[in-house]
Amino acid sequence: MAGDLPAPGARPASWWGTAEPTSGAAVPTGPIGINGSSLETLLECPRRWFLSRRARADAARQSRASIGDVVHLIARQAAEVGLDADQMRAELDRVWDEIPFETEWLSATERSEIDAAIGRFATYQEHEPTTLVAVEKDFRVPMNVEGHEVVLTGQVDRLERTGDGRIRVVDLKTGRKVLREADVLDHAQLGLYQLATRLGAFDDVTGGVRDVAPPALAFVRAGETMPALVSQPSIDDAPQLPGEELTVGPSWVHDRIAEGVAIIASGRFDAVECGACRYCPFASSCPALAAGAQGRPK
Ligand code: SF4
Image (cartoon, rainbow, N blue to C red; front, side, top):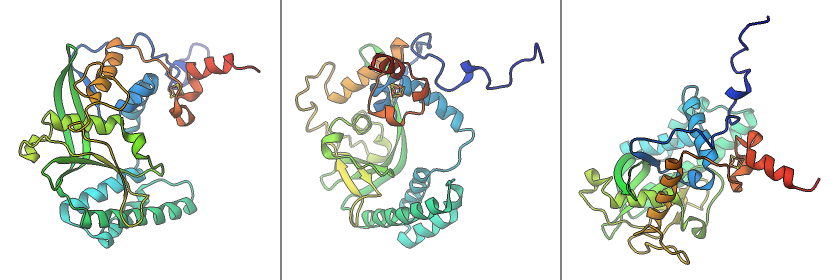
């Protein structure tokens, strides 16, 4: 009917990713938050970071469990109350139907892979020669970056004490892609967790110990009997990356955080073509991809 308001969602301006985030975004006035799990995305493609934060806020209102959520939940319970592999699988039985699958076949295939992943995690829990300090430990620690007040935030899956008394962060990964050590040399999430440890984010559970052991990603879908562990050098031992000069320092992690802070402080969230374009949920409306397609020969 003429004069009626359009149906909710019918305006292109309300569709995900079509609003242009490269200008007019609010420049923060208070401390700038840098989150461990999203720093890599911010550095890789600011537009994807900006839009995925909005998308996550929306998804949180309608979420159902994912495989990652379920594995993390069970790993947490296993650490807190000492579940063995059979008890973890019993927990998996209880919550599996909460995970949406498109087909029965997919559910069965995934279930068998996650059963195996649970087995690897149980072996890790039993045999890894470290002492568990905390699981799913939230942190929030302030720092100053070139005159900006910054707050590092996040949650580490496992905090462990190694034989030499240092603190190791272990992040559980439930995806299929397994990284190599060369890929995680400058892994921003692990780096940020190291720096948070150095800044005292976990003092309440580590007794003030801030010496960092090499943190690791634990790929629970890979490995023979244990998850495939892929470690990053400790910033205590190697503050600088091979072949890269420090710009802010005193470690490469400070440099990465300074880059992220500069992007957020600028209020500009440009699209940057990268490896993530292949699976980016905002690709269909992406100005960088559209510009690239225009420039290619027909
Ligand atoms: S498609 Fe690529 S360039 Fe565009 S927002 Fe996504 S990751 Fe960034």
